[in-house]
Length: 181
Image (cartoon, rainbow, N blue to C red; front, side, top):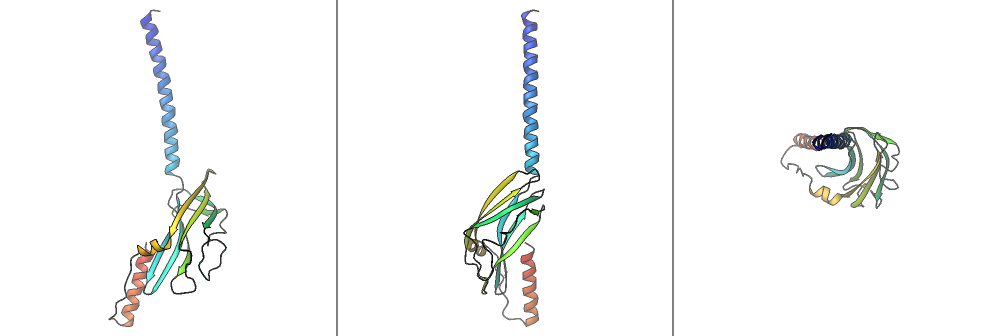
């Protein structure tokens, strides 16, 4: 075997090794990308609904992902104080092994303005621990501020020169508009 044949054999062997390594890396990345695309995306946010003189704040937990998740725990820091509503830490404090399907939303009223259910804890962090379908445990923290949530919401004034039927229809349509979001 001359030196050209030896060089050619070495280059072929190195090319094969590099091809196997690149293929393995591509498979790993593809697998990770597929897993990320199909994992649950659990998010918490505040939803404000206003109609006439009433402002209601909902604490929402939604799965924007493509697969379900099991919520293991939900903790607020500091604890949410909503006046007459009684819970130790937050409305979802008893969630343990609670399934949340893709696009499913859990909602809890935490404030109704001008009532006994007025939110006293305006800023808090909500920590949600959940596991995906493969048992991978994840914790997400959300900083929530009721003052910011209410300042960005759309306000619908009630017309002042209408009869009561028209006013009722207007209020009902405004409530329907807000519930679509």
